[in-house]
Image 1 (cartoon, one colour):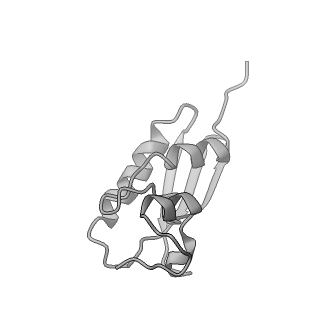
Image 2 (tube, helix red, strand yellow):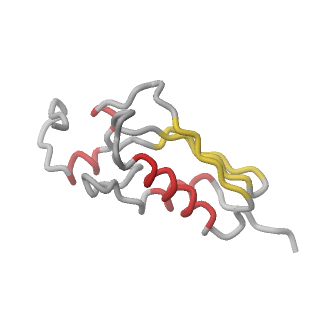
Length: 110
């Protein structure tokens, strides 16, 4: 029997359960997760923050790492925090906009 590793879709789904501590919207719906990879149990996530000075940044990176390590089949978890491209409100998902109560596409955080 071969070992089973999580798919990128399963990782995206798991990350979609992690709320941003300030807005209460998932990190995925906020558009903070840029990419997900998993090869033979080695999971890698590239993510950003709404601003480089976000006071919850360390907590969010740790939360992503812990969520990855808790997944069945993950041998190693790596989270790379990047600021290029910089986050902007257009990265919000439709669900994220809805959760924030935005009625149109031009609304912005603030």
